Image (cartoon, rainbow, N blue to C red; front, side, top):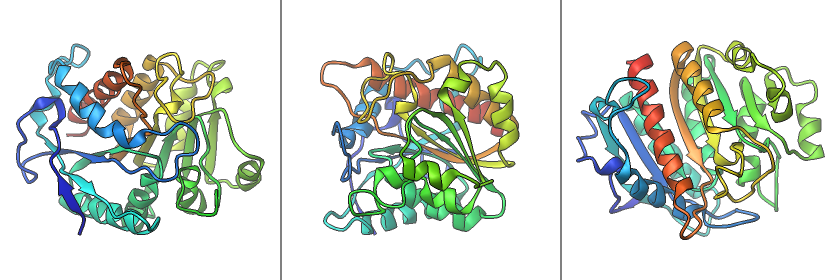
Length: 292
């Protein structure tokens, strides 16, 4: 199994035991295939460090989400030199958490980690699961830069096998467009359509099965509020768009787990790191109120 290293706890909370916790934060500082601005390996620790500044009371939900029990998983030291082996280890971690019936938030690192995570979830929940993918990019290439173990291919495994709902998309390749064509299991909510449609969240909910895994690439957000990503795209969702969508999904569906990926911290610019910390804590609040 993977080696581990010392990891700051989320929000500076004393770690309850893995057995007692209902929510598990899993930092995975994996970065090998980033193709534009690098630095995603620094994302998980930047988020954990910024989370020390969170207020633990949530004013919207009138609750303290931390009371649910949060365990920060020790950060794994993944092998290098083989693109497939790290994803095998990530899959093993995902399987352990699935078996323990915890709610995980995997914190990347580059989007490639989702390949390993989804491998575990698809094997376990194949007939019931759908994937909600929030991103500026489709990430549906079969291969990129000579490998399928690449952030540009992160959702191909879902696109080939199970219902996949993509939200916020505003960039894709011609190859991806051809792959999507005629596939009834893939539904895309283009960013420019979202901006013109009031009830788009209702349509997203209707497109999902009862059980959902969520993968959130931070470049789904507008670069004005999330500049710290590897591949920024003009346009994007805002803070309230994301919260409204996630709140509705947690309220209407059974969310099995999620990942948040592609933060590439900018030295001296702290607000994007804190935004991710706050987003994670909002998600924990939605899980506590709607899923437990």
